[in-house]
Length: 473
Image (cartoon, one colour):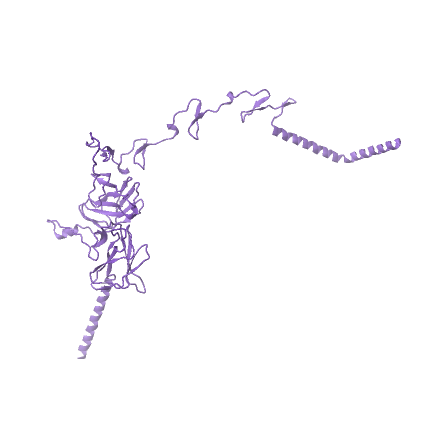
């Protein structure tokens, strides 16, 4: 009897340990039961607050109380509490944000209830979209979709061919990789939408020309104002499109857009575009069109009805040109710099207009020659009269000579004792002064040396004078 009791207790302990271990493993596998599944940042109208939302989804098999959960966005210190809300298993819930979401794209955060050791935060980026689309998690990939608040996002399904089985259909969708696709290229660029570019409207359209569905995971787009923008993990079906919406990231005056993969860089140079003009591939060539066609087949500008009588305007334009719809005249197709024919010898391509221009070797080589009595001023490249030489100067008068430095007449030097004295007043002045000083110094020295003799002579003269006066008296 005692053995049975002991055996029963041992079995109960074993079952309890197994259950505790299973619960611990389940909790480890479901650390974050609530995830973000949809972001609607560009609601219709000017006042979008109260219509924008972040959708949450409970992916676990247990109900979740949202007390302690928070949502926020990058660039805004506001945090919205979710206390009092809950999610049943598999439920979707659109949270109307109390703060504004950026239309140009950004980042939102889901803060999980934190313990004393760490804070768990789920971060999700989103791109710029129009008012009729949201950024949605479909399967394992984020992509553009119709808004579905508090509902599961639509799943894109590929219909299998009649001759293929289910296994072959699943193999058509490539697994996400490090962007090694080679069938996707840039198909359309809109850089100058009407209105403010900061409100969105700019976009770069990608086209899949292959026969298989591919993923954009790891692929990037680079512009003159945007350094390697990472594309979302979206799928493009054969002959399908993906529109990367941007906000003030393209230059209106022409620029460059590059599609980056792990093996190649597909670069497109676009010209200056007017409001709502598109740089599109039509019939294998890049042209400017007034029709923007995001996500659909590119279309040329519709032909406008001519007011004047058309003579031969309906005839086809020569190769390399297209008909201007405003004037009905043939106009050269503006091409990218990489696809233009090389310029002729002695010419170079203007980077602003993509036209060939002659290389100027020097300015002087293209100027008209000066007259026989003129010379070219090296500072202004203009012709000026040749300066008169000494042979054409008027002869100096008698007693004058020509100054070789100024070519002006001056008085000639005087002759003294058969030698010519320099007539330079300054130089002569210096010599005379030295002579006078030397003379005075010599006289003073003589007086000093013979001072006693002069004193004796003065005393004898004075004595003699006194005697003469006495004698007279």
